[in-house]
Image (cartoon, rainbow, N blue to C red; front, side):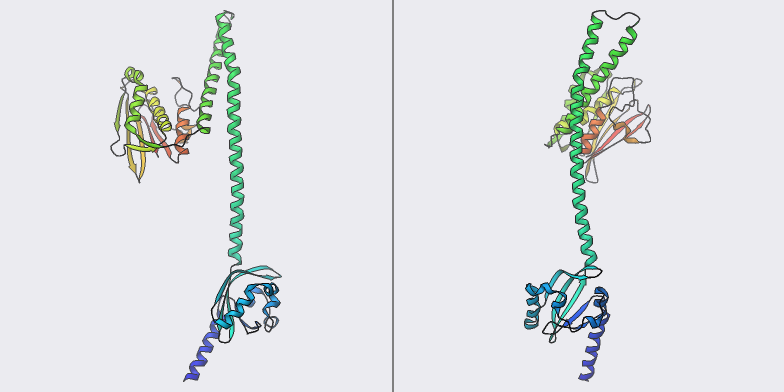
Length: 363
């Protein structure tokens, strides 16, 4: 019975050895190869007769001066297995990389391996891609900085000659140097010069905001910020009889930069007053809420509204205006959107003509 069980064990071990997906080899005490399974022959593309009987150093000569060779021998003495990562095997088709586990099996040294060539190649490619992406990112940052500096210099340098043109036009007007026939054209030139000066001032403000943004944050009260804005717009609010309603019960405070939050609310409230509907009393509702653990601020009015374009973000473009019958440059919403997105938030708008507009900010 014992003999039968022994034969069964040998057959079972032989089946696992030959049918395994992973390469297996067996070496004697001199580290000569005495057996190799089919998976190993397939992996390294070698014939059995070219492998059996040869020494480990025939295939890995560099091991002679390597501590790994001695560690393999130690396994035969101590019986303690050892493992190694990314062992290279050079073939005509290229370099293969294996993870190796060496262990004692009877009086012999067994080695089980795992082919990790594709995995290590993928990792190397990912590392290379990461380095390339970092290089591209660094180049983009540098280019963006150069563009910002160029924009600032261009806007700053153009401001002086345009201001001079505006002053010269005023001098011509004060000296009555323009004929009656030329006055309509002169007025147009003055308007264009003023508009260009205003746009350059606005552009400088936008660039300054982007390049000198302060990341300092503190706990702020929405009520206190709105109270400050009401004081700043007191005359407009009284004259337009605007009603501002507030509801900050669900989220009364926020950790934010005070200048940036004031700018956001200042732009939204002033726009709501500016684009009010003359046929009804202006009402502005400002409230906060928590949606999926994120703070959402809503500013809703009953003003003129506007027809939303196919691209809802068009309104946030620089110098984009939905109404032209009141003064404005189309900078406020661009600045507001820049502040919010630079802080990882998002702003959306819904509007309907003669019914009003609602801005929702997710911080």
